[in-house]
Length: 289
View 1: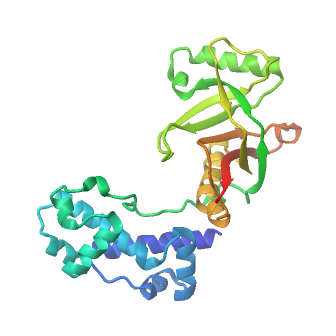
View 2: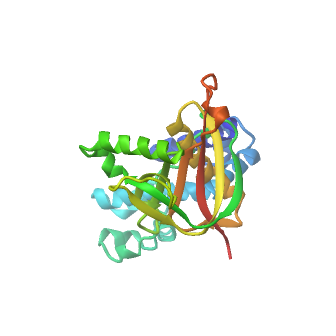
View 3: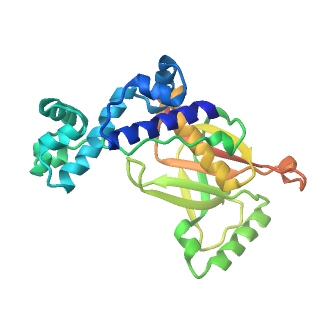
């Protein structure tokens, strides 16, 4: 896995260099730069970019051209030439990527029609260098409740009291798990909020200033792995899910707007001589129609 990701990232870097120097970019040149056979290199690229090489090259060229059109005084024909397009070919490619023509962008016409194809270079994080091979399974869970505080509370002057409240809650409820419950206030999943919490039980003890969050009944893919640092393991699991799992399981798509992450605790992993931290992240999914 490490090697495949390395080949993909090398191909991306090569493409960026050639675009900046206004050079032709062929699949064979990319494969040669990566040290792989052309057919195999193309399959690796398709796997991670979810598009073929030349489609990606076109989008990256048009993304660079987008900046040129709005930040420079160059005319459209000069920008087209910079990216090795004829005037007509450039207009066609630009409209395919952004939904408007270059001249419409220059005039700021129909800019509300610009679609989501505008993109930065893709880079795949090599999660395997941080964690062992992740394990996953799918589970449908009834409605859950969590009680805790938002990440903003952790920057308040009452942080010491909040930490003490969490410790008391864990001791009195005999539950040492600290969950990171992430949820999004927008459908694009860009504006993330984080909530640090314990499981809620109607018979448990909870500080008065803590908030209860309800998570509805949901189907989840649960992924766990282990590594040396909790935060790195959780980040690596998320990288694995978005870059690998969703592409292998095309019958599913993301559902709702929650993610749940926590460090696993049990007798085995609490032993002083056990060197690794085991973590688990829950991602909400549903079957595609």
